[in-house]
Amino acid sequence: MSQRNCKLILSARNVQNLEQVKSKCANSEVAILPFDLTDFDNAKNHVTTAISFFGKIDILINNGGVSQRSLLVETDFDVDKKLIEVDYLGTVALSKALLPHFIQNQKGHFVTITSLMGKFGSPYRSGYCGAKHALHGFFDVMRMEHQKDNIDVTLICPGFVQTNVANNALTADGSKQNKDDFATLNGMELQLFAKKLVKAVDSKKFEAYIGRKEVLGVYLKRFFPKLLHRVVLKSTVR
Figure 1 (cartoon, rainbow, N blue to C red):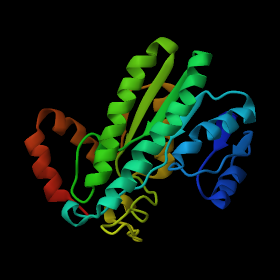
Figure 2: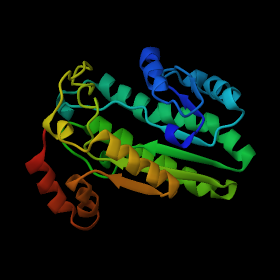
Figure 3: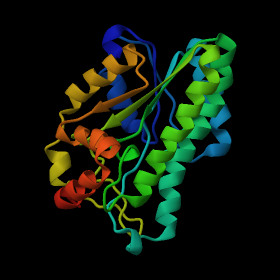
Figure 4: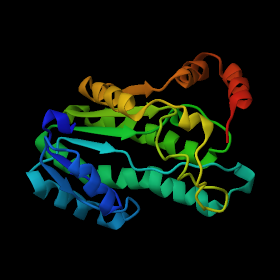
């Protein structure tokens, strides 16, 4: 996005990492707004600050989240709560806080990074799948209720991408996995994923499935759910 001379607001918890990203965005005006998605009560304040940087916001890319690698029966309920708070409620709180600004402008675009796990399930990811499925329900309704306000909603569903998502995934007791898995290490290159994401945003797609052969799971779920069940069980990697 910086190569298009967009005005960018970068948000995450780690200020040092944000500064590193900012240093690579030479073609854009870039502001940094650090915060934690689970700070629900300050979502409106964060939005007010974000708007103050450049006067308005055109697109919100919801990309915050944490994954999971643990069997359902072994997973502490606090882990399920954490996954819902970060992956679902944090995104909902921020999006609802920004919604009045989009309505006032009669223009806006919510881009939410969900997952293929928001379309079908996989072992060791019960709470993660639940949170990602919830995002689809919420933003489908957002799209329906605010089409009249010229507000677009795009759901991006990545498969395996070469990020730190597996390394940072929560285990049964809430601790990080602290290791990569084979599927993530051999997933789509991040640069290619980013190009496909931007293309989907430009096209204002309702949903975009970005990955390799794992994308086929969406269509198997729709037409051959029992076959998908067998395929996923056979190929599951913790």
